[in-house]
Image (cartoon, rainbow, N blue to C red):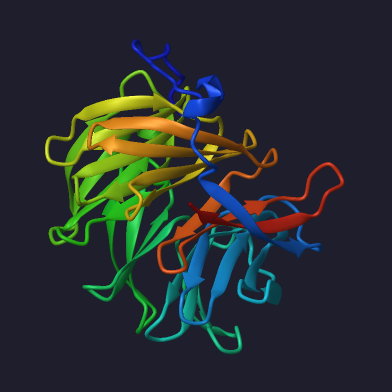
Length: 331
């Protein structure tokens, strides 16, 4: 990782608590459900969602398990284990299979959606991490190793190729209206832009005065890429046409997930510091912190589903309080 540089000049953090009472807006997120996970230990990683059945799949990294949860009934359906350090998760609706990257085993596994049995495995993916599904091409991308994106055929369960990167990839996003993949590479202090037709890096966007870029979200309508950095805690907004940073905003600390709510034009940023930041988009280059909602220390992983219109937050066991999934409904 690069050492954090001085704070960006011109930061104008906006805190909801600083607004006069008459100007404060109603809470942006309402807690509607809490799902207990009493036997789950350690920290969580990424999520996937089965919109048709209302199933949430959670990588319980510290527990070496994949947790399948029915969010409609609020019940845990299955704990699939052992999976050594599960990280990235993806749900493939056409085949009803759940893909899980195992950082500890260096594999990408596909489980049957009905019985949760192992269907197939792709090996030789050391430190496998984030996973994304390219529906248009029918292929998966898995970040792994000291720096690469694996291209995986989920039908034949085979490695189709690999795109080298300058450092281990964290969150990455695929364009649906284009061929680019934007990849956070915090070890290199940059964002790698891949042409997935050419399977090569076509541009590199370097970060300035910030470091530890982990979560990422994409707003294709306005051509904006959102990057969450931990040092210092900052949201950086890039213009995807020029590759230039157009604005920055202070956010909560230790962020690990970041989502764009297209319908409301807002961002949700979950942070291990114990908060979720809700940020309103006023214009493509204008953003304002609407609310800093307290959660629990360590609750830094989340997932927003546009299909269910809910935000799911993983809260790890800590301080004698058991692990849980909190379900929030946006307003």
